[in-house]
Image 1 (cartoon, rainbow, N blue to C red):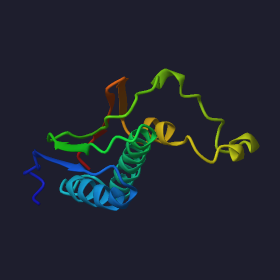
Image 2 (image 1 turned 45 degrees about the horizontal axis):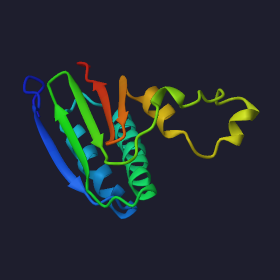
Image 3 (image 1 turned 120 degrees about the vertical axis):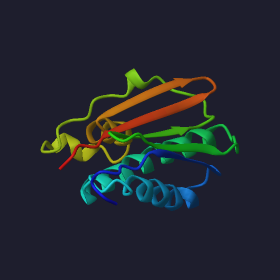
Image 4 (image 1 turned 90 degrees about the horizontal axis):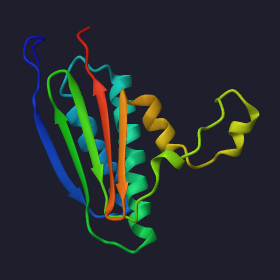
Length: 148
């Protein structure tokens, strides 16, 4: 793609709330994000990782209450940013109650084998918004794309 033309548009899809679909979610969102040649490969990997975490959390939330409604994923390319939303129909949770994790270099961090998803989203995305209620959760991840 030429440096003057920037991809703009949306990709939206629904997947069954099953772990077997995580690779599909990563592949579609990663390929969509990579359409913007200003996004370095490492940054595309960040997008794929945090979207995978959000989708995994959505699958687990719905499994906890045996909801089989598809999980919705939307990836928007707006010219200066990539915005990814993952929406589920789980029981919801309080995002402010997610505990802060110890620093990576500390021995205490070794005690945390799970529960890293929200923290990773907040660290790797330029913005991570979580809206959650009794009818489900929407995770909105924003990645700013800058000219090289």
